[in-house]
Image (cartoon, rainbow, N blue to C red; front, side, top):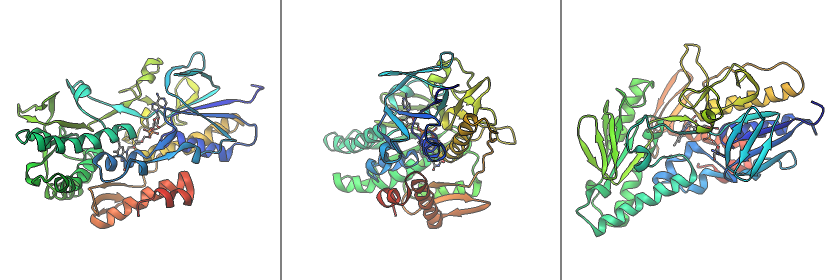
Length: 396
Ligand SMILES: Cc1cc2nc3c(=O)[nH]c(=O)nc-3n(C[C@H](O)[C@H](O)[C@H](O)COP(=O)(O)OP(=O)(O)OC[C@H]3O[C@@H](n4cnc5c(N)ncnc54)[C@H](O)[C@@H]3O)c2cc1C
């Protein structure tokens, strides 16, 4: 390859933006042309989205202009939507044009997995982007306004959250904090409001420490959340949900957080996928495609026990570091690094001042865990934008 190699990064989420930031530091002048493509001109902090969705924070705090994070002299930013990946032609089709690449990084994030449950796609909302959380926030507020006009419609004040994994639990924690404010604003008796968190698995937060799960459920129950665990949603309708037990919950608000799959374009491009995600090799490339890296929710990395790690921001960022290193190594013909996930711990927020987590081998809960959650958030802002971003967007 005699001309300057072209690196194209799809998606400016955790995986994509950290790869771009690392590349702009590591690449020498004229060593590669790097293009970052994203459908919005901002990066959103997905791990904060449960707050603006519930209305306990402003959506502005969960997004940052991409041009504030990258050096435009080193990275070309293209605001466009990717519509197709053509690995055979080494091309990516965008809504406005085509990009050719020598190296491709796919960090397009995940899509809701509905497990074929009828009606979920049509009638449930998802916490996935700034646009989706703005919609959920407005929708929730509107239900309170509507109830005042039709007080017999208790379904307006019934909120169903499908899935009690991290996203579902964090969201119901915020929603439970928001309800008293909305009740006050709209002169509504709080006892008329119901929040259901429904989970098909035998426990909330499957795979998490049982003692902490019990603590989390007690905190949330005390805030007014009703759990239905080991209870599958059989169908979602315009009127609410029907459970496998036959029970029907009438609700005008269904939020589905029950699963994630990879971006549909990966299957369409002809790659082998599992639930839309690609099992990458130990250098984070697609087996058989040594110029294509896949990161974050689009990828599957196996644990030493042979199980896929859950898709998280933490793993996406660690992958991005290795991906950037390996791109530079490939260009310089030097040795590639193997990806090894180093879990630093997990903390789930339960609303204002409450959280649970495991940091190292230590279990933490309550106020200490809530502070740790803030530290993790601030650390991420520091990684992508340094002290100025911490001061601008940090929630202290
Ligand atoms: C509410 C919530 C809370 C969470 N909390 C935590 C947590 O506490 N800790 C944790 O580790 N993980 C958490 N996660 C999971 C974490 O956010 C994801 O695993 C992580 O965002 C995945 O990063 P990614 O780079 O793969 O994709 P994303 O961060 O989702 O980014 C994908 C990017 O691609 C762009 N894009 C998508 N499609 C296109 C297209 N066709 N064309 C152009 N651009 C496109 C999107 O706009 C976005 O910028 C949470 C997730 C949610 C929803």
